[in-house]
Image (tube, rainbow, N blue to C red; front, side, top):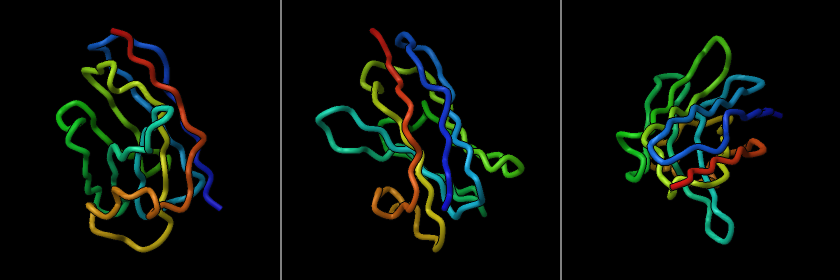
Length: 125
C-alpha cells in the first residue's frame, strides 16, 4: 500500500505561483497530478516517470507548470507559474505502482493505483 501525502495548496492571485508536493511512502513507476472542479470530471495535468524522468503535460498547462522529482525523498513536485482562475481546483497526486506505460496512456486516471487526499488551489482574479 503506497501512501501519498500532498501539500502546498492555497489561495493566490492571478499571475502568482505555487508549488505542490507529493511525498510517497515508497518508489513507484510513475507519479501524476490531476485536478478536479466540483461538477466536472477529473482532469489530467501532468505525469513523470521515476526511472527516466520523462514528463508529459496537458496542453493547458504547458509552459506554465513543471513537474519534477526528488529521488532521495520519494517526492514529486508541481511548480505552477502564471496561475489563472481556470486553474482553481482540488489537485490530486496519483501513483502507478507497476508496469510502465507510454506517457500518453498515463493521462488516464484509471492507470493509477493510489491517490492522495487532494489539496485545494484557488486562484482569484
